[in-house]
Length: 256
Image (cartoon, rainbow, N blue to C red):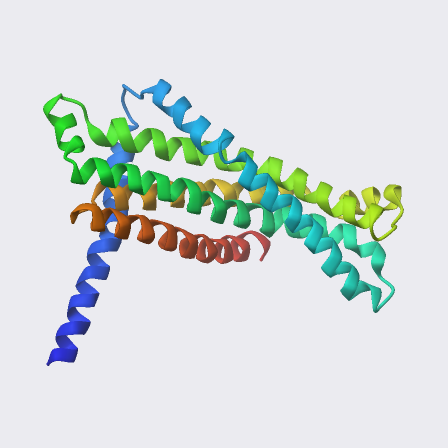
């Protein structure tokens, strides 16, 4: 009986946790239909999500491109196919590595921040205070954050793609001594618009996941300081896992 009770309690907690996300999404969508939309808050959150995340996103992208170039050379050198390094680096970054790695970095940085901020406001009763001031906390706190991360993620991925491909170019040309003109031609010769647009679609979906999960975890946080820490941890872990699962689903849908 103890085993069955434990399984039942765990299932109940899981169902309760995942029920928060559709509930939060429904609340945000309902409030998007009519003003006010607090554009100043949206712009402020865009600056936080986009501009302040640039260093970590670009640093991740440039070294990812460098590592991809080195690893591709090690593999292709065995078959005398070094000319395919540029194609592999470009396709990998545009389709997968750019949006996924940027999504994981933003989930760790921005998602944790959202969950911690809203969780602290919840346990300190600041969210309840907004109700007493006739201010809808979902419209004022959650909606700007969700919109900002959806808008800024594709822009971050575009910059990360460019920087990652540049990192691969630097290693291939200046370290592996490849012809720069041949490398540039091979980088774009086999690319299609779907390779670029698929990365942007993934970025927008990943941004939606990060914003929804982190805001829901923080908004419905309970349990004081310990609860804030647990909500922040759950926000990052669930966002990262959801990004990887969504990446597979989107890849299978787009390219099959």
